[in-house]
Every structure is written in structure tokens, then in C-alpha cells.
Length: 143
Ligand code: THU
Picture 1 (cartoon, rainbow, N blue to C red):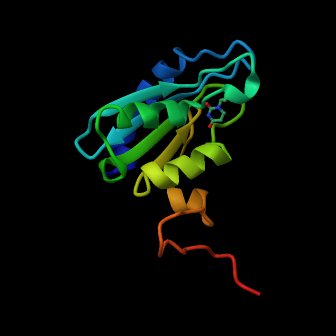
Picture 2 (picture 1 turned 45 degrees about the vertical axis):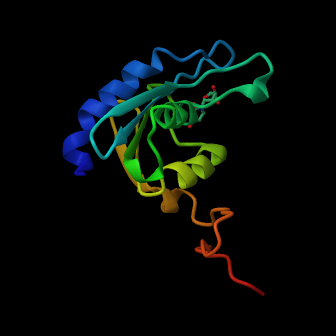
Picture 3 (picture 1 turned 135 degrees about the horizontal axis):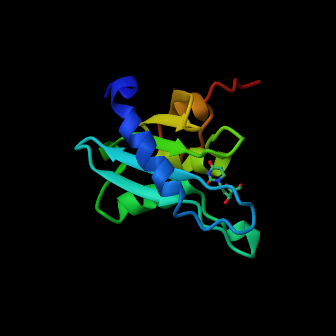
């Protein structure tokens, strides 16, 4: 996938999806679009809760949405995250761990509606925890 050519419409879709956020506590609205290898898209926005720790980020809502439509880790080529808030969007640590499991090959595109950044999942989470035997790609050295 050529992110720089193909992502503009996905960023627009993610910004549109951010309007669906339920964020009465933070006021920070995030939209996420999961793009499959077949160019299908699955949307998610952050959903907060008065018991703050129950909040689910836009990325996880979108990834779980894709899973509920039968998509799996091999099917996701991009995860596009957008927010027009002053803070540039960046997936939180929990979402990075979920991305590593459910969308390991994806390009992660972030945008504030103006600038765009693209990263791989392993760039975002180099020392991922994995229960899969053999998944020892950690840069942390033994002592
Ligand atoms: N949030 C996301 O949806 N995605 C991120 O990558 C970071 C944070 C949400 C969670 C919460 O509803 C609000 O942003 C403030 O943390």
C-alpha cells in the first residue's frame, strides 16, 4: 500500500469517525479506520466511561470491530488514527500491544488533519510481549 497516495481519504474517514467519540470527560476525540488488504474499512472512536479505566481507545474499538466482521491479524494493512485536538494523536501503550497482536503487518498512520506520520507496529512497540513461542524480537539484551 502506498500510504502517501492512498491515505488521504482514510484520514478524512478517521476525522469523520472522531465525531462519533463518546468523550464527555476528556473532550479528546479520536477516530480510527482499520483498512484491510481488500480495502474494506472498519471504524472506531474512543468511548469513555465515568469509571475512567473502562475507557476504550478508538484504535481498539476499530480493531475489535474488524475482528467482529471476521478479519484477523493477516488481513489488516493499515490503521489510520486521527484527531484534530492540539495534541498530535499517537496510540497509547495498551493499543500498541493490541496492534502487535491483531495487526502486526499494518502501517500505522497518524494525523491531526494537517501533518501525517507513518510507522510500523514494531517501530511503535519494539519489545512486544508475546505468548507465541519464537516471537523473541526484543531488543532488550540479556545480562
Ligand atoms: N485515546 C484514544 O482513543 N486513542 C489514543 O491513541 C490515545 C487516547 C482516547 C482515550 C480517552 O478517551 C481520550 O483519548 C483521552 O485519553
